[in-house]
Image (cartoon, rainbow, N blue to C red; front, side):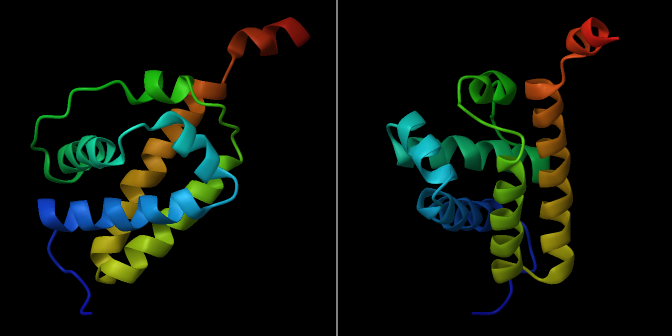
Length: 128
């Protein structure tokens, strides 16, 4: 299969389907997502809308990624696993420059989620 060189909604959907196929097989991430997602087809649609918004600046995504992820039993180290699977998937599917665009966005999103989920300045004040 030739590397995808153009980002469009079909390419984004292909990425999401392949990536979450890997996530679901991962021993650490799979059980978390399988417990949280009742309808994978609907979830893929939501994620496609999210990534269409992120990558193309269009679409109808209206959601609260931080709020959704707050309900999951996540640990900061799981984001490295998530990003590793993401990078492997983008490298499989896309030309290197396109994969790098997806990866840069995913890294910023992961950093934002980690900060929102785990950074507790009040705890730092309590120990000083």
